[in-house]
Length: 176
Image 1: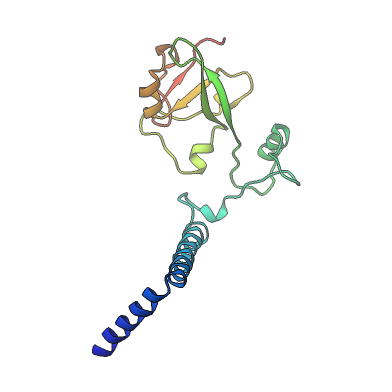
Image 2: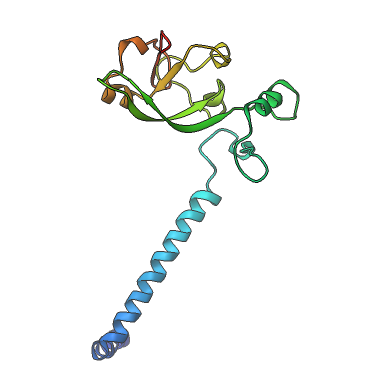
């Protein structure tokens, strides 16, 4: 134990005599430890832990060659024909200007999804229901699924309410 204390005293004296070297050494150690922690966090999250979905190893994102999403006609072809895919869902993210109960429309981040999106990812509503097959067809009335937080903070109009959704949701009764 006394050798370790003597070594620590000597290290302190040497580092105190050369402050520039000490600063560079401490910064290099801090940078190395920080980079190692960041890399481990990414590897641990992305590679070592599975996604929090049922059968996450069987979920794949199908895109066009060269990038970009598959077209709606291609999605419909895959859905209607036996292509060896167990379950298929479509999604597209974006934003839209919606009047959710205020004086004017506001920009809302949204995700357009097909009817089985929530089932595929194992997300079931706390209250109400998700989309049906009939509501997933072209020309069907608009349907809004909103989190309870969104519904409360934006005070969504009662004309959207139909009592279905992820946490709560509202169907718009009139187009416009």
